[in-house]
Length: 150
Image 1 (cartoon, rainbow, N blue to C red):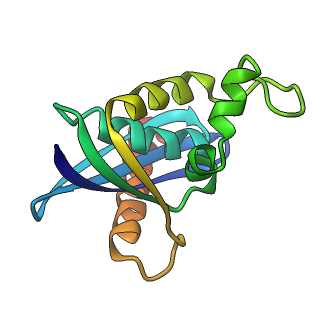
Image 2: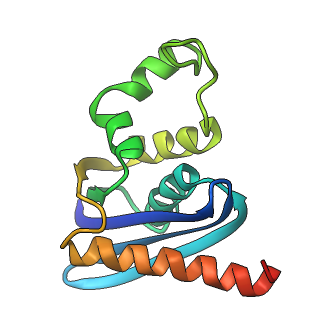
C-alpha cells in the first residue's frame, strides 16, 4: 500500500461567498497540487472539498496522512462526530440536520477506501505546506473573482 502525505486547506471570501480549496499530495518526494473553487459556498464546504478532491485523485487504496487546519473536518473523525451523525440519521446531538451531508458522505466513502491518519495543524502558522495550500485556495478565489467580476 502506497504511503501518501496530504496537506489541505479551504478558503472563502464571504461566508457564504466565493470559495477555493487546495490540496498537496506527496508521494516519494513528488508533489501534486489539486485545487478548485465554487461561486456560492462556505469555508467548511471548501475545507471538505480540499480533502475530497485530493483523495479522489488517488487511483488505488493508500495509507494517507492528512494534515488540515480545519477542526471541523479533523474532529469529525477524531472525536467520533461522523459515527454519531450516522447513528442519528444525519442529525446532530441537538437534533438539527447535519450541514454538508452530501460532502460528508463522499468523504466517508473515501475514508473507507483509504487508511487515513488525521492530523490537526495550526492554521496560518509556520507550517510551510499548510500555508502553501492557503495561498493556492485564495488563488482559486481570485480566479473566480475575475471570472464573475465579483
